[in-house]
Length: 476
Image 1 (cartoon, rainbow, N blue to C red):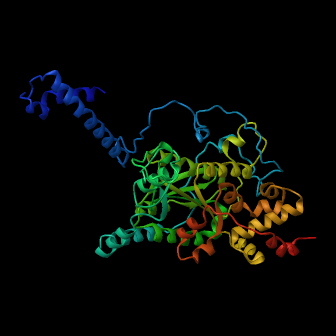
Image 2: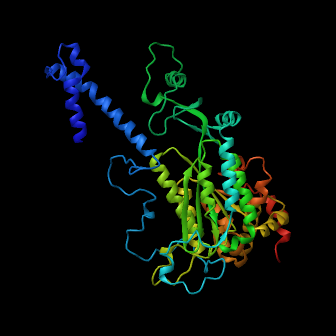
Image 3: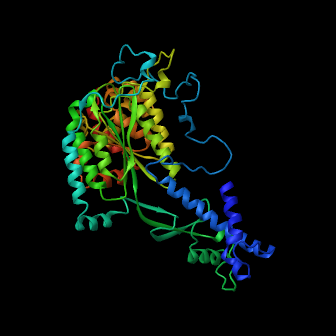
């Protein structure tokens, strides 16, 4: 504030406007000139401060790197504030709305003390996931190639991102108009005039009076960059699936490198999850992060989703218009609950119920999610029911729901022991509003991202004949 006041008084004495009225530098002007200087100074200093904040939020190093700007307003808790649990005293959680028997997929680990959940997972301990030398060579080769002329042309043609979006922001091209939902964006004049004419019954009297309810805003369409959060399972149960994980990540790189899509990495094992790399367009940084990943320990899948949610919330503080996509790469066999669910004195051990809670938080936050299962044994469902992976699991749950006399699919999964052990990917996808995929099926697609975005929000439309077609497979 003192700096702004100092600049204001300096402007009063050295403003070029003073010269127009016959005042020299450092000569105090008349009250009329001071008023004119002030009118010019206020928007100029406002724009300067906004530009300074914008530059500071983009800094990657230095004491002010990643400074967050917060709009003034009332200190009212908003949805998602419940994640700020670090400063709150421990209190027993309310009983979950999801009822049923113990929900562990595998047997609960023995010998877990209170300190297990407050200890950060050691990402640098265990068996190496990627060959560091190959990653380094790949990064160096890519760096040399990106300096060539042809690759620059390719980059510029892809630089707008992967997601086709439509909004009222003034970018892209206008495709239609609509009634304003919140604040009015760009007014679509032809539709506004037509609405006013329709309200008056087609009268051609001039001038046409336009009211507030007649206003229509333009809807623009264009390519929007994605913020992709790769949630990678590096627990010991993934040891036999690392080849598929490597191949899947290479495909993601091929589709995102050279565009404005930003990619971040969250790895999870042992007692929790760690953000190994914040979202970035620099794949050389991502290579260094992948080189740190090592396999060991248990599977805290619920904590991984919570860490991904924290990353998205931080990114939205810097830019509220990001389009997040969470891709969970795992065998979906969680055996560790959230720390606050298994705190001191807690006897319940509920990794699946915690997984349902965190998945629902992603859905409420309007985050796209794809659950990519790398377990090769899961292909039996697609072969048995002759449908894509997500639809096959949904059909199996609906059939078992009817057989058990239940109503809720999630209750059915919790009630059937074999489903709890094999339907982890479906639980995450269904409760988060996304879809479950097999990695082998995705690798056959021309574009993985196009497949995930094309069906990321859709639901399976199973008909009654689909149920009758496979009812004969149910045990009598």
